[in-house]
Structure formats: structure tokens, C-alpha cells
Length: 101
Image 1 (cartoon, helix red, strand yellow):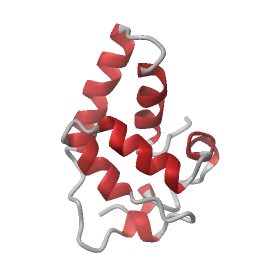
Image 2 (cartoon, rainbow, N blue to C red):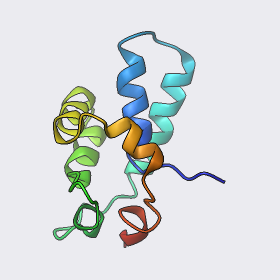
Image 3 (cartoon, one colour):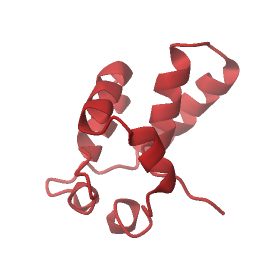
């Protein structure tokens, strides 16, 4: 089974929300928010340290939890314009997700 990057669903919701508004997006956003609640926002985030492009994962998750989705997306895309593609092909089990406490 393919396991996606922890912030991949945020990319999808940000990109799709500007195009159309469906129940799918609403359900995905709710599920993502529940997943984001699990983040401890560590002072020394191993997820970010082990990301090859140093994505500010805790900062993005915190913004997402606070409903600042566009700001979170801006940070992600400024960090790496190809973030959506990287989130699909990245072996995150060994990097960000694999190093989460």
C-alpha cells in the first residue's frame, strides 16, 4: 500500500480548493485536521531534520491546524515549487514520517 507524505493531502486540498468546492475536499480537510492534531510540534523536529529539502513540516502543520491553509501552502510551495510531485515519490517512511516520535 502506498503511504503518502504527511503533508501531501494539504497540497491536494490547497490546489483543488481554488478550482472547485466539493464534499470530497471538505471530508479530506476534516481527516487531515484530525491527523494534524497528532503532531506534537517538537522543539527539535526530526521530521524536518530528516527531510532532504528541509520542509518546515511543524510550521505548516501548525498553520493548517489554525485554519491558515493558504499560508501553509505558500510556505510549502516557496520551499519547493515541486512539492506535490516530491510528496508522491519521496520515501518518507525513511525520512520525515519515519522519524516522527
